[in-house]
Length: 153
Image (cartoon, rainbow, N blue to C red; front, top):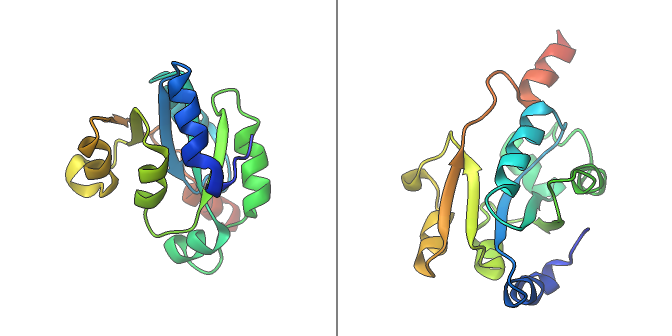
């Protein structure tokens, strides 16, 4: 289910007051593949409710270049939101997920194993209120960039 950004802080507060352990992750999730599904299942296993911060189209262009995203934000939200592992989707357009994380205040913030505490600016926010940061290994050879390159060749 898509949750409006203006409502996400209150929404997650209600979940936590109801005894739910809130997990948050974020990304572009442009062309969904097995690596994404494996990652999101592992993220969900860290708690009760998985909130996925989805980059807006404009922020994907800033991160990935003018030819991306391949799929628009509403289509990406519909696809990832249909996965069993994903409970809620919220859009964010900033360069990093720091602001949305400060609003969500997840019990656990999950990122791929290609990050470290030192390279993840969001980690400081999560740690400041006693939250946990977890890293999940990426599935070797699975990436949207690889899929795009394969299609082009």
